[in-house]
Length: 317
Length: 317
Image (cartoon, rainbow over all chains, first blue to last red; front, side, top):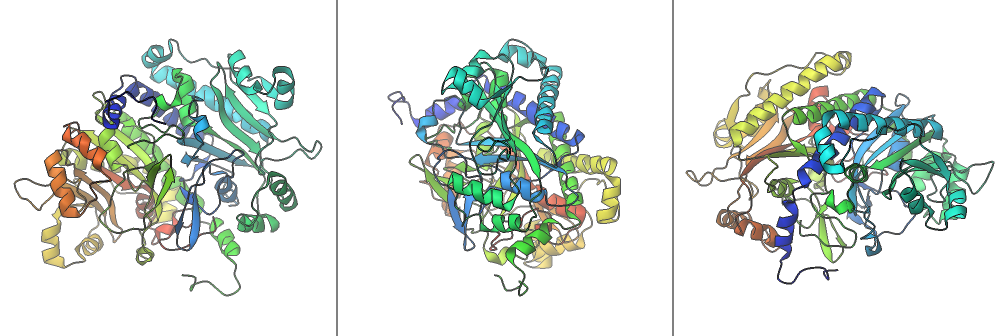
Protein backbone atom coordinates (compact mmCIF):
# COMPACT_ATOMS: atom_id res chain seq x y z
CA UNK A 1 0.00 0.00 0.00
CA UNK A 2 2.88 2.36 0.76
CA UNK A 3 5.08 1.07 -2.08
CA UNK A 4 4.85 4.27 -4.09
CA UNK A 5 6.09 6.38 -1.20
CA UNK A 6 9.43 8.08 -1.76
CA UNK A 7 12.09 7.23 0.76
CA UNK A 8 12.54 9.91 3.36
CA UNK A 9 9.36 11.86 2.57
CA UNK A 10 7.04 11.70 5.55
CA UNK A 11 3.28 11.27 5.39
CA UNK A 12 2.94 14.77 6.81
CA UNK A 13 5.15 16.30 4.12
CA UNK A 14 3.23 14.52 1.37
CA UNK A 15 -0.03 15.82 2.85
CA UNK A 16 1.35 19.36 2.99
CA UNK A 17 2.30 19.13 -0.69
CA UNK A 18 -1.12 17.81 -1.56
CA UNK A 19 -2.91 20.57 0.35
CA UNK A 20 -0.96 23.23 -1.58
CA UNK A 21 -1.35 21.89 -5.13
CA UNK A 22 -1.96 24.76 -7.56
CA UNK A 23 -5.06 23.36 -9.31
CA UNK A 24 -7.06 22.74 -6.13
CA UNK A 25 -8.81 26.12 -5.64
CA UNK A 26 -10.03 26.22 -9.24
CA UNK A 27 -11.34 22.66 -9.10
CA UNK A 28 -13.17 23.44 -5.86
CA UNK A 29 -14.73 26.52 -7.44
CA UNK A 30 -16.03 24.44 -10.36
CA UNK A 31 -17.43 21.90 -7.89
CA UNK A 32 -19.06 24.68 -5.87
CA UNK A 33 -20.61 25.96 -9.10
CA UNK A 34 -22.07 22.50 -9.77
CA UNK A 35 -23.58 22.38 -6.28
CA UNK A 36 -25.04 25.90 -6.43
CA UNK A 37 -26.52 25.42 -9.88
CA UNK A 38 -27.98 22.07 -8.87
CA UNK A 39 -29.67 23.59 -5.79
CA UNK A 40 -31.15 26.27 -8.03
CA UNK A 41 -32.33 23.77 -10.64
CA UNK A 42 -33.95 21.58 -7.99
CA UNK A 43 -35.71 24.60 -6.49
CA UNK A 44 -36.98 25.78 -9.89
CA UNK A 45 -38.32 22.28 -10.57
CA UNK A 46 -40.10 22.17 -7.21
CA UNK A 47 -38.11 19.44 -5.46
CA UNK A 48 -37.98 19.56 -1.66
CA UNK A 49 -34.56 19.15 -0.07
CA UNK A 50 -34.12 16.61 2.73
CA UNK A 51 -31.02 16.62 4.94
CA UNK A 52 -28.67 13.64 4.64
CA UNK A 53 -28.27 10.84 7.16
CA UNK A 54 -24.97 9.13 7.82
CA UNK A 55 -26.43 6.29 9.89
CA UNK A 56 -29.34 3.95 9.34
CA UNK A 57 -30.37 0.41 10.29
CA UNK A 58 -30.89 -0.19 6.55
CA UNK A 59 -28.84 1.07 3.68
CA UNK A 60 -28.17 0.33 0.04
CA UNK A 61 -26.88 -3.25 -0.25
CA UNK A 62 -25.08 -2.24 -3.50
CA UNK A 63 -24.41 -4.76 -6.22
CA UNK A 64 -20.72 -5.17 -5.48
CA UNK A 65 -18.87 -6.09 -2.33
CA UNK A 66 -17.49 -3.44 0.01
CA UNK A 67 -16.13 -3.64 3.55
CA UNK A 68 -18.98 -3.52 6.05
CA UNK A 69 -19.13 -0.25 7.99
CA UNK A 70 -21.43 -0.16 10.97
CA UNK A 71 -21.51 0.93 14.59
CA UNK A 72 -23.55 0.07 17.66
CA UNK A 73 -25.64 2.73 19.44
CA UNK A 74 -28.94 2.73 21.34
CA UNK A 75 -29.31 -1.07 21.14
CA UNK A 76 -29.20 -0.82 17.35
CA UNK A 77 -26.67 -1.64 14.64
CA UNK A 78 -26.33 1.41 12.35
CA UNK A 79 -24.79 1.16 8.90
CA UNK A 80 -23.02 4.10 7.31
CA UNK A 81 -25.25 5.15 4.44
CA UNK A 82 -24.00 3.96 1.04
CA UNK A 83 -26.83 5.87 -0.61
CA UNK A 84 -30.13 7.45 0.49
CA UNK A 85 -32.23 5.19 -1.76
CA UNK A 86 -34.63 3.83 0.89
CA UNK A 87 -34.98 7.14 2.70
CA UNK A 88 -35.98 8.82 -0.54
CA UNK A 89 -38.62 6.20 -1.19
CA UNK A 90 -39.94 6.34 2.38
CA UNK A 91 -39.97 10.15 2.58
CA UNK A 92 -42.14 10.24 -0.54
CA UNK A 93 -44.88 8.42 1.38
CA UNK A 94 -45.91 11.87 2.59
CA UNK A 95 -49.05 12.81 0.65
CA UNK A 96 -47.81 16.36 0.03
CA UNK A 97 -44.28 15.51 -1.11
CA UNK A 98 -44.06 14.80 -4.84
CA UNK A 99 -40.31 15.00 -5.36
CA UNK A 100 -37.28 15.31 -3.10
CA UNK A 101 -33.51 15.51 -3.29
CA UNK A 102 -30.70 14.92 -0.84
CA UNK A 103 -27.10 16.03 -1.06
CA UNK A 104 -25.32 13.41 0.97
CA UNK A 105 -21.90 12.02 1.66
CA UNK A 106 -21.87 8.29 0.93
CA UNK A 107 -19.39 5.87 2.47
CA UNK A 108 -18.48 2.86 0.34
CA UNK A 109 -15.45 1.08 1.71
CA UNK A 110 -14.36 -0.32 -1.65
CA UNK A 111 -11.71 -3.01 -1.84
CA UNK A 112 -8.23 -1.89 -2.86
CA UNK A 113 -8.68 -3.22 -6.42
CA UNK A 114 -10.68 -0.06 -7.15
CA UNK A 115 -7.87 2.25 -6.07
CA UNK A 116 -6.63 2.94 -9.60
CA UNK A 117 -9.87 3.16 -11.61
CA UNK A 118 -9.62 6.95 -11.51
CA UNK A 119 -13.28 7.22 -10.50
CA UNK A 120 -13.64 5.59 -7.09
CA UNK A 121 -13.35 7.23 -3.69
CA UNK A 122 -14.32 5.46 -0.49
CA UNK A 123 -16.37 8.47 0.51
CA UNK A 124 -17.89 10.98 -1.85
CA UNK A 125 -20.89 13.28 -2.22
CA UNK A 126 -23.96 12.06 -4.05
CA UNK A 127 -26.92 14.15 -5.17
CA UNK A 128 -29.90 11.82 -4.89
CA UNK A 129 -33.33 12.74 -6.27
CA UNK A 130 -36.61 10.91 -6.54
CA UNK A 131 -40.08 11.56 -8.00
CA UNK A 132 -43.42 10.08 -7.09
CA UNK A 133 -45.53 8.67 -9.94
CA UNK A 134 -42.94 9.39 -12.61
CA UNK A 135 -41.20 6.97 -14.95
CA UNK A 136 -37.73 6.44 -16.35
CA UNK A 137 -38.36 8.67 -19.36
CA UNK A 138 -39.19 11.59 -17.08
CA UNK A 139 -36.10 11.13 -14.91
CA UNK A 140 -33.76 10.76 -17.88
CA UNK A 141 -35.04 13.97 -19.42
CA UNK A 142 -34.80 15.70 -16.03
CA UNK A 143 -31.13 14.74 -15.75
CA UNK A 144 -30.37 15.85 -19.30
CA UNK A 145 -31.93 19.21 -18.46
CA UNK A 146 -30.00 19.41 -15.20
CA UNK A 147 -26.66 18.81 -16.92
CA UNK A 148 -27.37 21.48 -19.53
CA UNK A 149 -28.49 23.90 -16.81
CA UNK A 150 -25.36 23.32 -14.73
CA UNK A 151 -23.04 23.49 -17.73
CA UNK A 152 -24.63 26.69 -19.05
CA UNK A 153 -24.36 28.24 -15.59
CA UNK A 154 -20.68 27.32 -15.29
CA UNK A 155 -19.99 28.71 -18.78
CA UNK A 156 -21.59 31.99 -17.73
CA UNK A 157 -20.06 32.23 -14.24
CA UNK A 158 -16.58 30.76 -14.63
CA UNK A 159 -15.52 30.94 -18.29
CA UNK A 160 -11.84 31.78 -17.67
CA UNK A 161 -11.51 28.99 -15.14
CA UNK A 162 -13.06 26.48 -17.56
CA UNK A 163 -10.67 27.56 -20.30
CA UNK A 164 -7.76 27.13 -17.92
CA UNK A 165 -8.82 23.71 -16.65
CA UNK A 166 -10.31 22.06 -19.75
CA UNK A 167 -9.19 24.23 -22.64
CA UNK A 168 -12.73 25.04 -23.80
CA UNK A 169 -16.18 25.92 -22.51
CA UNK A 170 -18.64 23.16 -21.67
CA UNK A 171 -20.81 21.74 -24.47
CA UNK A 172 -24.60 21.85 -24.29
CA UNK A 173 -26.11 18.58 -25.46
CA UNK A 174 -29.14 17.54 -27.47
CA UNK A 175 -30.87 14.32 -26.39
CA UNK A 176 -28.31 11.77 -25.26
CA UNK A 177 -27.88 8.47 -27.12
CA UNK A 178 -29.43 5.43 -25.44
CA UNK A 179 -27.82 1.99 -25.35
CA UNK A 180 -28.80 -1.28 -23.72
CA UNK A 181 -26.27 -3.36 -21.79
CA UNK A 182 -27.08 -6.63 -23.58
CA UNK A 183 -26.66 -5.16 -27.04
CA UNK A 184 -23.50 -3.25 -26.19
CA UNK A 185 -21.99 -6.32 -24.57
CA UNK A 186 -22.74 -8.41 -27.66
CA UNK A 187 -20.99 -5.79 -29.79
CA UNK A 188 -18.05 -4.81 -27.58
CA UNK A 189 -17.47 -7.65 -25.10
CA UNK A 190 -17.44 -7.58 -21.28
CA UNK A 191 -15.73 -4.17 -20.93
CA UNK A 192 -18.48 -2.56 -23.05
CA UNK A 193 -19.28 0.30 -20.67
CA UNK A 194 -15.78 1.74 -20.58
CA UNK A 195 -15.19 1.02 -24.27
CA UNK A 196 -18.36 2.89 -25.25
CA UNK A 197 -17.41 5.73 -22.89
CA UNK A 198 -14.06 6.03 -24.69
CA UNK A 199 -15.77 5.90 -28.11
CA UNK A 200 -18.32 8.60 -27.21
CA UNK A 201 -18.03 12.35 -27.18
CA UNK A 202 -21.39 13.01 -25.53
CA UNK A 203 -22.88 11.51 -22.38
CA UNK A 204 -25.10 8.50 -23.06
CA UNK A 205 -27.66 6.36 -21.25
CA UNK A 206 -27.07 2.72 -20.57
CA UNK A 207 -30.25 0.76 -19.82
CA UNK A 208 -30.95 -2.59 -18.21
CA UNK A 209 -28.48 -3.51 -15.49
CA UNK A 210 -28.88 -6.62 -13.34
CA UNK A 211 -28.32 -5.31 -9.84
CA UNK A 212 -29.95 -4.37 -6.51
CA UNK A 213 -33.45 -5.61 -5.69
CA UNK A 214 -34.99 -2.13 -5.67
CA UNK A 215 -34.61 -1.50 -9.42
CA UNK A 216 -37.93 -2.38 -11.08
CA UNK A 217 -38.08 -5.48 -13.25
CA UNK A 218 -39.91 -5.36 -16.58
CA UNK A 219 -42.88 -7.69 -16.04
CA UNK A 220 -43.21 -8.21 -19.79
CA UNK A 221 -39.57 -9.26 -20.08
CA UNK A 222 -38.52 -10.80 -16.76
CA UNK A 223 -34.79 -10.55 -16.20
CA UNK A 224 -34.63 -7.06 -17.67
CA UNK A 225 -34.91 -3.88 -15.61
CA UNK A 226 -36.18 -0.32 -15.83
CA UNK A 227 -32.93 1.25 -14.77
CA UNK A 228 -30.58 3.69 -16.45
CA UNK A 229 -27.05 4.92 -15.92
CA UNK A 230 -25.53 8.11 -17.22
CA UNK A 231 -22.07 7.37 -18.63
CA UNK A 232 -19.74 10.33 -19.13
CA UNK A 233 -17.90 10.28 -22.49
CA UNK A 234 -14.15 10.29 -23.27
CA UNK A 235 -13.48 7.38 -20.92
CA UNK A 236 -14.74 9.11 -17.76
CA UNK A 237 -17.26 6.31 -17.19
CA UNK A 238 -20.38 5.99 -15.05
CA UNK A 239 -21.66 9.18 -13.42
CA UNK A 240 -25.25 8.47 -12.33
CA UNK A 241 -27.36 5.43 -11.51
CA UNK A 242 -31.12 5.47 -11.47
CA UNK A 243 -34.24 3.38 -11.85
CA UNK A 244 -37.93 3.05 -11.48
CA UNK A 245 -38.30 1.29 -8.12
CA UNK A 246 -39.91 -1.91 -7.02
CA UNK A 247 -42.70 -1.00 -4.59
CA UNK A 248 -44.88 -4.12 -4.50
CA UNK A 249 -44.35 -6.54 -1.64
CA UNK A 250 -44.33 -9.82 -3.57
CA UNK A 251 -42.05 -8.51 -6.27
CA UNK A 252 -39.63 -7.09 -3.68
CA UNK A 253 -39.53 -10.47 -1.91
CA UNK A 254 -38.83 -12.22 -5.21
CA UNK A 255 -36.06 -9.79 -6.13
CA UNK A 256 -34.52 -9.98 -2.64
CA UNK A 257 -34.35 -13.76 -2.98
CA UNK A 258 -32.75 -13.51 -6.42
CA UNK A 259 -30.14 -10.99 -5.25
CA UNK A 260 -29.42 -12.76 -1.97
CA UNK A 261 -30.52 -9.80 0.16
CA UNK A 262 -30.86 -10.37 3.91
CA UNK A 263 -34.62 -10.12 4.50
CA UNK A 264 -34.27 -9.98 8.27
CA UNK A 265 -32.39 -6.65 8.08
CA UNK A 266 -35.15 -5.29 5.83
CA UNK A 267 -38.10 -6.63 7.86
CA UNK A 268 -39.55 -3.20 8.73
CA UNK A 269 -39.10 -2.00 5.15
CA UNK A 270 -40.85 -5.18 3.99
CA UNK A 271 -43.68 -4.52 6.46
CA UNK A 272 -44.21 -1.06 4.91
CA UNK A 273 -44.30 -2.70 1.49
CA UNK A 274 -46.68 -5.41 2.74
CA UNK A 275 -49.09 -2.71 3.93
CA UNK A 276 -49.02 -1.33 0.37
CA UNK A 277 -47.56 1.99 1.57
CA UNK A 278 -44.45 2.25 -0.61
CA UNK A 279 -45.18 4.82 -3.31
CA UNK A 280 -44.40 4.27 -6.96
CA UNK A 281 -41.23 6.30 -7.59
CA UNK A 282 -38.34 6.75 -9.97
CA UNK A 283 -35.11 8.59 -9.40
CA UNK A 284 -31.37 8.61 -9.55
CA UNK A 285 -28.19 9.76 -7.87
CA UNK A 286 -25.08 11.33 -9.33
CA UNK A 287 -21.61 11.79 -7.93
CA UNK A 288 -20.50 15.40 -7.46
CA UNK A 289 -16.81 14.56 -7.63
CA UNK A 290 -17.31 12.53 -10.82
CA UNK A 291 -19.08 15.43 -12.54
CA UNK A 292 -16.29 17.73 -11.35
CA UNK A 293 -13.71 15.29 -12.68
CA UNK A 294 -15.38 15.13 -16.09
CA UNK A 295 -15.73 18.90 -16.34
CA UNK A 296 -12.13 19.56 -15.29
CA UNK A 297 -10.75 16.62 -17.34
CA UNK A 298 -8.94 15.17 -14.35
CA UNK A 299 -7.64 11.61 -14.70
CA UNK A 300 -7.64 10.64 -11.03
CA UNK A 301 -10.75 11.54 -9.02
CA UNK A 302 -8.59 11.69 -5.91
CA UNK A 303 -7.22 14.94 -7.37
CA UNK A 304 -10.70 16.47 -7.07
CA UNK A 305 -10.79 16.10 -3.30
CA UNK A 306 -8.95 18.14 -0.67
CA UNK A 307 -8.10 15.10 1.46
CA UNK A 308 -7.28 11.74 -0.18
CA UNK A 309 -9.91 9.00 -0.06
CA UNK A 310 -8.51 6.40 -2.45
CA UNK A 311 -9.94 2.89 -1.93
CA UNK A 312 -7.76 0.77 0.34
CA UNK A 313 -5.41 3.61 1.18
CA UNK A 314 -4.85 5.21 4.56
CA UNK A 315 -4.88 8.96 5.07
CA UNK A 316 -3.54 10.93 8.03
CA UNK A 317 -6.44 13.43 7.93
CA UNK B 1 -36.50 3.62 26.14
CA UNK B 2 -39.73 2.27 24.70
CA UNK B 3 -41.77 3.24 27.75
CA UNK B 4 -43.75 5.94 25.95
CA UNK B 5 -44.88 3.51 23.26
CA UNK B 6 -48.61 2.86 23.11
CA UNK B 7 -49.60 -0.76 23.55
CA UNK B 8 -50.40 -2.43 20.27
CA UNK B 9 -48.95 0.24 17.99
CA UNK B 10 -46.04 -1.20 16.06
CA UNK B 11 -42.80 0.62 15.32
CA UNK B 12 -43.73 0.54 11.64
CA UNK B 13 -47.13 2.15 12.27
CA UNK B 14 -45.56 4.89 14.39
CA UNK B 15 -43.03 5.54 11.63
CA UNK B 16 -45.79 5.73 9.02
CA UNK B 17 -47.61 8.30 11.16
CA UNK B 18 -44.45 10.30 11.58
CA UNK B 19 -43.68 10.31 7.85
CA UNK B 20 -47.15 11.73 7.11
CA UNK B 21 -47.29 14.51 9.69
CA UNK B 22 -48.91 17.62 8.21
CA UNK B 23 -46.26 20.17 9.21
CA UNK B 24 -43.32 18.29 7.68
CA UNK B 25 -43.33 19.62 4.08
CA UNK B 26 -43.49 23.24 5.23
CA UNK B 27 -40.69 22.79 7.74
CA UNK B 28 -38.53 21.15 5.05
CA UNK B 29 -39.21 24.05 2.69
CA UNK B 30 -38.04 26.55 5.32
CA UNK B 31 -34.92 24.47 5.91
CA UNK B 32 -34.27 24.30 2.17
CA UNK B 33 -34.62 28.09 2.08
CA UNK B 34 -31.98 28.40 4.80
CA UNK B 35 -29.59 26.16 2.87
CA UNK B 36 -30.11 27.91 -0.46
CA UNK B 37 -29.75 31.40 1.01
CA UNK B 38 -26.63 30.33 2.92
CA UNK B 39 -24.99 28.96 -0.25
CA UNK B 40 -25.74 32.26 -1.96
CA UNK B 41 -24.42 34.33 0.93
CA UNK B 42 -21.21 32.28 1.06
CA UNK B 43 -20.72 32.68 -2.69
CA UNK B 44 -21.30 36.46 -2.54
CA UNK B 45 -18.75 36.70 0.26
CA UNK B 46 -16.17 34.71 -1.70
CA UNK B 47 -15.98 31.57 0.41
CA UNK B 48 -14.96 28.35 -1.35
CA UNK B 49 -17.08 25.29 -0.64
CA UNK B 50 -15.37 22.04 0.36
CA UNK B 51 -17.24 18.72 0.32
CA UNK B 52 -17.86 17.06 3.70
CA UNK B 53 -16.07 14.00 5.02
CA UNK B 54 -17.76 11.41 7.19
CA UNK B 55 -14.58 9.59 8.19
CA UNK B 56 -11.24 10.79 9.48
CA UNK B 57 -8.41 9.52 11.70
CA UNK B 58 -8.86 12.73 13.71
CA UNK B 59 -12.07 14.51 14.59
CA UNK B 60 -13.39 17.05 17.04
CA UNK B 61 -12.85 15.70 20.58
CA UNK B 62 -15.83 17.83 21.76
CA UNK B 63 -16.03 19.13 25.28
CA UNK B 64 -18.63 16.65 26.46
CA UNK B 65 -18.75 12.88 26.39
CA UNK B 66 -20.41 10.98 23.57
CA UNK B 67 -20.33 7.32 22.56
CA UNK B 68 -17.25 6.61 20.45
CA UNK B 69 -18.06 5.93 16.81
CA UNK B 70 -15.30 4.56 14.65
CA UNK B 71 -14.63 1.86 12.09
CA UNK B 72 -11.57 0.02 10.77
CA UNK B 73 -10.53 0.26 7.11
CA UNK B 74 -7.22 0.22 5.24
CA UNK B 75 -5.21 -0.45 8.41
CA UNK B 76 -6.60 2.73 9.91
CA UNK B 77 -9.14 3.57 12.59
CA UNK B 78 -11.58 6.15 11.19
CA UNK B 79 -13.81 8.24 13.43
CA UNK B 80 -17.15 9.52 12.25
CA UNK B 81 -16.72 13.27 11.95
CA UNK B 82 -18.24 15.19 14.86
CA UNK B 83 -17.34 18.45 13.13
CA UNK B 84 -15.02 19.52 10.28
CA UNK B 85 -12.91 21.79 12.52
CA UNK B 86 -9.46 20.35 11.73
CA UNK B 87 -10.17 19.89 8.03
CA UNK B 88 -11.18 23.54 7.77
CA UNK B 89 -7.95 24.63 9.43
CA UNK B 90 -5.81 22.30 7.30
CA UNK B 91 -7.54 23.18 4.00
CA UNK B 92 -6.77 26.85 4.65
CA UNK B 93 -3.05 26.06 4.47
CA UNK B 94 -3.46 26.45 0.71
CA UNK B 95 -1.92 29.85 -0.17
CA UNK B 96 -4.83 30.73 -2.49
CA UNK B 97 -7.68 29.78 -0.17
CA UNK B 98 -8.68 32.60 2.16
CA UNK B 99 -12.03 31.32 3.40
CA UNK B 100 -13.96 28.07 3.09
CA UNK B 101 -17.21 26.48 4.17
CA UNK B 102 -18.50 22.95 4.44
CA UNK B 103 -22.07 21.73 4.75
CA UNK B 104 -21.63 18.46 6.57
CA UNK B 105 -23.58 15.88 8.49
CA UNK B 106 -22.08 15.47 11.95
CA UNK B 107 -22.48 12.33 14.06
CA UNK B 108 -22.47 12.88 17.83
CA UNK B 109 -23.69 9.81 19.66
CA UNK B 110 -24.99 11.72 22.66
CA UNK B 111 -25.94 9.90 25.83
CA UNK B 112 -29.64 9.40 26.43
CA UNK B 113 -29.75 12.23 29.00
CA UNK B 114 -29.83 14.65 26.07
CA UNK B 115 -32.92 13.04 24.53
CA UNK B 116 -35.35 15.60 25.92
CA UNK B 117 -33.42 18.88 25.65
CA UNK B 118 -35.40 19.71 22.52
CA UNK B 119 -32.20 20.68 20.68
CA UNK B 120 -30.06 17.54 20.39
CA UNK B 121 -30.02 15.00 17.57
CA UNK B 122 -27.37 12.30 17.32
CA UNK B 123 -26.81 13.25 13.70
CA UNK B 124 -27.50 16.63 12.19
CA UNK B 125 -26.22 19.01 9.51
CA UNK B 126 -23.69 21.67 10.38
CA UNK B 127 -22.59 24.57 8.22
CA UNK B 128 -18.95 25.11 9.10
CA UNK B 129 -16.99 28.15 7.89
CA UNK B 130 -13.49 29.44 8.52
CA UNK B 131 -11.43 32.47 7.54
CA UNK B 132 -7.68 32.89 7.33
CA UNK B 133 -6.16 35.88 9.13
CA UNK B 134 -9.47 37.11 10.52
CA UNK B 135 -10.48 37.59 14.14
CA UNK B 136 -13.52 36.98 16.31
CA UNK B 137 -15.01 40.41 15.58
CA UNK B 138 -14.99 39.68 11.86
CA UNK B 139 -16.64 36.27 12.25
CA UNK B 140 -19.32 37.54 14.62
CA UNK B 141 -20.28 40.33 12.23
CA UNK B 142 -20.23 37.82 9.33
CA UNK B 143 -22.70 35.60 11.16
CA UNK B 144 -24.97 38.52 12.06
CA UNK B 145 -25.02 39.46 8.38
CA UNK B 146 -25.68 35.86 7.35
CA UNK B 147 -28.68 35.57 9.68
CA UNK B 148 -30.19 38.81 8.38
CA UNK B 149 -29.56 37.73 4.78
CA UNK B 150 -31.21 34.34 5.32
CA UNK B 151 -34.15 35.80 7.25
CA UNK B 152 -34.78 38.53 4.66
CA UNK B 153 -34.64 35.93 1.89
CA UNK B 154 -37.14 33.68 3.68
CA UNK B 155 -39.46 36.65 4.30
CA UNK B 156 -39.36 37.41 0.58
CA UNK B 157 -39.65 33.83 -0.71
CA UNK B 158 -41.94 32.11 1.79
CA UNK B 159 -44.02 34.72 3.63
CA UNK B 160 -47.25 32.66 3.79
CA UNK B 161 -45.42 29.64 5.11
CA UNK B 162 -43.71 31.73 7.80
CA UNK B 163 -47.04 33.19 8.86
CA UNK B 164 -48.49 29.69 9.07
CA UNK B 165 -45.59 28.19 11.02
CA UNK B 166 -44.55 31.06 13.32
CA UNK B 167 -47.40 33.54 13.15
CA UNK B 168 -45.24 36.40 11.90
CA UNK B 169 -42.42 37.19 9.49
CA UNK B 170 -38.83 36.92 10.68
CA UNK B 171 -37.26 39.90 12.43
CA UNK B 172 -34.12 41.58 11.08
CA UNK B 173 -31.70 42.39 13.88
CA UNK B 174 -29.34 45.22 14.71
CA UNK B 175 -26.04 44.27 16.37
CA UNK B 176 -26.58 41.41 18.80
CA UNK B 177 -25.95 41.87 22.54
CA UNK B 178 -22.70 40.37 23.84
CA UNK B 179 -22.36 38.60 27.19
CA UNK B 180 -19.50 36.82 28.89
CA UNK B 181 -19.98 33.43 30.56
CA UNK B 182 -18.31 34.42 33.84
CA UNK B 183 -20.46 37.52 34.29
CA UNK B 184 -23.68 35.81 33.30
CA UNK B 185 -22.96 32.89 35.61
CA UNK B 186 -22.33 35.28 38.50
CA UNK B 187 -25.67 36.96 37.84
CA UNK B 188 -27.87 33.97 36.95
CA UNK B 189 -26.20 30.84 38.36
CA UNK B 190 -25.08 27.66 36.61
CA UNK B 191 -28.01 27.51 34.13
CA UNK B 192 -27.17 31.01 32.87
CA UNK B 193 -27.12 30.17 29.17
CA UNK B 194 -30.65 28.82 29.01
CA UNK B 195 -31.97 31.44 31.44
CA UNK B 196 -30.56 34.27 29.34
CA UNK B 197 -31.94 32.60 26.21
CA UNK B 198 -35.39 32.61 27.82
CA UNK B 199 -34.99 36.25 28.92
CA UNK B 200 -33.91 37.44 25.47
CA UNK B 201 -35.91 38.29 22.40
CA UNK B 202 -32.94 38.69 20.06
CA UNK B 203 -30.01 36.34 19.42
CA UNK B 204 -26.98 37.14 21.55
CA UNK B 205 -23.29 36.26 21.73
CA UNK B 206 -21.83 34.42 24.67
CA UNK B 207 -18.05 34.77 24.96
CA UNK B 208 -15.37 32.85 26.83
CA UNK B 209 -16.16 29.14 27.15
CA UNK B 210 -13.66 26.70 28.66
CA UNK B 211 -13.65 23.86 26.15
CA UNK B 212 -11.72 22.10 23.36
CA UNK B 213 -7.99 22.74 22.95
CA UNK B 214 -8.37 24.38 19.54
CA UNK B 215 -10.14 27.53 20.81
CA UNK B 216 -7.53 30.26 21.26
CA UNK B 217 -6.60 31.32 24.79
CA UNK B 218 -6.19 35.00 25.60
CA UNK B 219 -2.47 35.32 26.39
CA UNK B 220 -3.12 38.47 28.42
CA UNK B 221 -5.73 36.70 30.54
CA UNK B 222 -4.82 33.00 30.67
CA UNK B 223 -7.84 30.83 31.39
CA UNK B 224 -10.09 32.94 29.17
CA UNK B 225 -10.72 32.20 25.50
CA UNK B 226 -11.43 33.97 22.22
CA UNK B 227 -14.52 31.96 21.43
CA UNK B 228 -18.13 32.90 20.89
CA UNK B 229 -21.46 31.12 20.73
CA UNK B 230 -24.63 32.35 19.12
CA UNK B 231 -27.56 31.71 21.45
CA UNK B 232 -31.03 31.82 19.94
CA UNK B 233 -33.57 33.74 22.06
CA UNK B 234 -36.89 32.62 23.58
CA UNK B 235 -35.34 29.54 25.16
CA UNK B 236 -34.13 27.97 21.90
CA UNK B 237 -30.54 27.92 23.20
CA UNK B 238 -27.18 27.53 21.53
CA UNK B 239 -27.13 27.64 17.74
CA UNK B 240 -23.51 28.23 16.70
CA UNK B 241 -20.08 27.72 18.23
CA UNK B 242 -16.98 29.48 17.00
CA UNK B 243 -13.54 30.71 17.95
CA UNK B 244 -10.22 32.06 16.92
CA UNK B 245 -8.05 28.95 16.73
CA UNK B 246 -4.86 27.93 18.42
CA UNK B 247 -2.24 27.46 15.70
CA UNK B 248 1.07 27.56 17.59
CA UNK B 249 2.66 24.26 18.51
CA UNK B 250 3.61 24.98 22.13
CA UNK B 251 0.27 26.51 22.95
CA UNK B 252 -1.60 23.57 21.35
CA UNK B 253 0.48 21.13 23.42
CA UNK B 254 -0.30 23.09 26.60
CA UNK B 255 -4.01 23.21 25.82
CA UNK B 256 -4.10 19.49 24.92
CA UNK B 257 -2.55 18.69 28.28
CA UNK B 258 -5.06 20.89 30.11
CA UNK B 259 -8.03 19.35 28.29
CA UNK B 260 -6.77 15.77 28.54
CA UNK B 261 -6.60 15.30 24.76
CA UNK B 262 -4.87 12.17 23.44
CA UNK B 263 -1.71 13.53 21.78
CA UNK B 264 -0.90 10.23 20.08
CA UNK B 265 -4.08 10.41 17.98
CA UNK B 266 -3.15 13.97 16.98
CA UNK B 267 0.53 13.30 16.27
CA UNK B 268 0.36 14.20 12.56
CA UNK B 269 -1.68 17.31 13.31
CA UNK B 270 0.91 18.25 15.93
CA UNK B 271 3.68 17.70 13.37
CA UNK B 272 2.00 20.19 11.02
CA UNK B 273 1.79 22.66 13.91
CA UNK B 274 5.42 22.01 14.86
CA UNK B 275 6.49 22.89 11.32
CA UNK B 276 4.66 26.20 11.77
CA UNK B 277 2.27 25.40 8.92
CA UNK B 278 -1.10 25.82 10.65
CA UNK B 279 -2.57 29.12 9.47
CA UNK B 280 -4.09 31.67 11.82
CA UNK B 281 -7.84 31.25 11.40
CA UNK B 282 -11.18 32.00 13.00
CA UNK B 283 -14.53 30.49 12.21
CA UNK B 284 -17.68 28.84 13.44
CA UNK B 285 -20.30 26.23 12.71
CA UNK B 286 -24.07 26.42 13.03
CA UNK B 287 -26.71 23.73 13.09
CA UNK B 288 -29.18 23.79 10.21
CA UNK B 289 -31.88 21.95 12.14
CA UNK B 290 -31.49 24.32 15.12
CA UNK B 291 -31.94 27.38 12.91
CA UNK B 292 -34.95 25.69 11.31
CA UNK B 293 -36.35 24.90 14.76
CA UNK B 294 -35.96 28.51 15.90
CA UNK B 295 -37.54 29.91 12.75
CA UNK B 296 -40.48 27.50 12.86
CA UNK B 297 -40.86 27.78 16.67
CA UNK B 298 -40.74 24.00 17.10
CA UNK B 299 -40.23 22.71 20.65
CA UNK B 300 -38.61 19.38 19.82
CA UNK B 301 -35.87 19.41 17.19
CA UNK B 302 -36.74 15.82 16.33
CA UNK B 303 -39.87 17.29 14.69
CA UNK B 304 -37.63 19.11 12.19
CA UNK B 305 -36.21 15.89 10.78
CA UNK B 306 -37.88 13.37 8.47
CA UNK B 307 -36.46 10.35 10.31
CA UNK B 308 -36.07 10.42 14.12
CA UNK B 309 -32.57 10.82 15.52
CA UNK B 310 -33.22 11.45 19.23
CA UNK B 311 -30.21 10.73 21.49
CA UNK B 312 -30.29 7.22 22.92
CA UNK B 313 -33.32 6.17 20.90
CA UNK B 314 -33.49 3.51 18.23
CA UNK B 315 -35.08 4.11 14.84
CA UNK B 316 -36.20 1.54 12.29
CA UNK B 317 -35.03 3.69 9.34
